[in-house]
Image 1 (cartoon, rainbow, N blue to C red):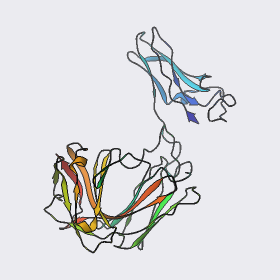
Image 2: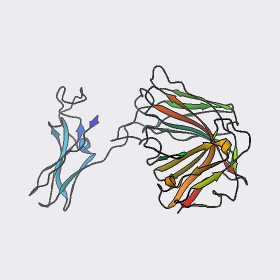
Image 3: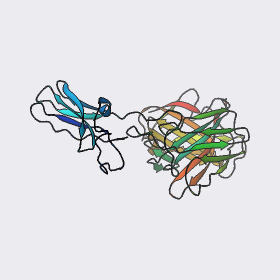
Image 4: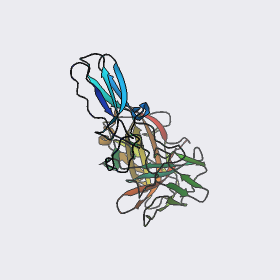
Length: 343
């Protein structure tokens, strides 16, 4: 079943009959649907127009009916406003996805427009999480940082239609195997398991269920080594304030010699705005530019710092990043994460 967006309503004098486009469910002639092969029943019920509503700037709508409409080969909600001078508006509310939470309704044909897949171990909680964020995102490079005004990945579903099943992502380490499959709306819940990825151990990624031929080669990534952040410093477990007009200097100490491509990451999230910075782990220091911090509003923001190794998979069109992380800790034990204040 397909939904049409509403047609504009032009207000005029005295009880103009307003019309809202409804479900493509009835009265459909052969070939009448742009998508083809939709056979209608020839009648309409209220449920066929349930996603649509007519509102009036003054007074109330009256004489509401869901009737066949040859113009859209479907059903149309019609009605009038009780006040002759009222402006009539057609509104549309997307229905929820038409499948259950045990899985989406379709199968993808390849990597879903890029994205990022994170496997993160946290020694302060002895847990590891797998997070899947799919879909392209607008970004800007600022120094060693990437600013994403709309965050990672895309939205869940559009106009009530479930997204395709992008398949199951699996990360395997020596101590465990952790998998994540999408819900009906196309989003992936965060998958969590007890235990940590050993430092330097190889993490293998797999992605099953997508119809890409040949399948992209998914990366094997060494887990990063632990880093410690001293207190007092720029970041603090008891409360951090950053001046947005100033560069923020970060410093850390690798607890074991890092591999040559090992990095240290810093993330800042405020609403949909997200900042990702990556520095060479062996440098022991990095700068978050004021130019990047000024993209955020004064107020609170979430932050975290971690060591990382990254890889990618490419299907010839889109590239998806795979990141293995280890949560950084302050020298006195707490995780380098939480809420800070931007001024």
